[in-house]
Image (cartoon, rainbow, N blue to C red; front, side, top):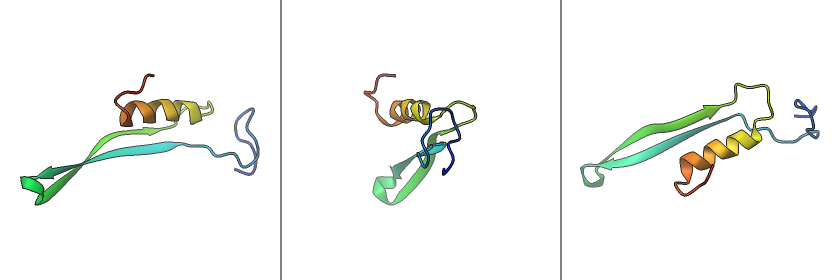
Amino acid sequence: MALPYYQNMKPYESVVFQFSHYIIESDNGGETYTIRNADQWINESTEFPNFEFVRKHNSETNPLSIT
């Protein structure tokens, strides 16, 4: 964003707002595959979302992460 949207942001700082986490599972010995949506997150708050995004993304994609 050219203009800071949240307090304490810098011009052109990246803002994350969404992720989707999919898992591809093999069926029938690898002949077919199933894709399922494991989790998703979208920012719905008025707070700067980057820190919450990282916490949520790490907890969903890294089983050893500590939140």
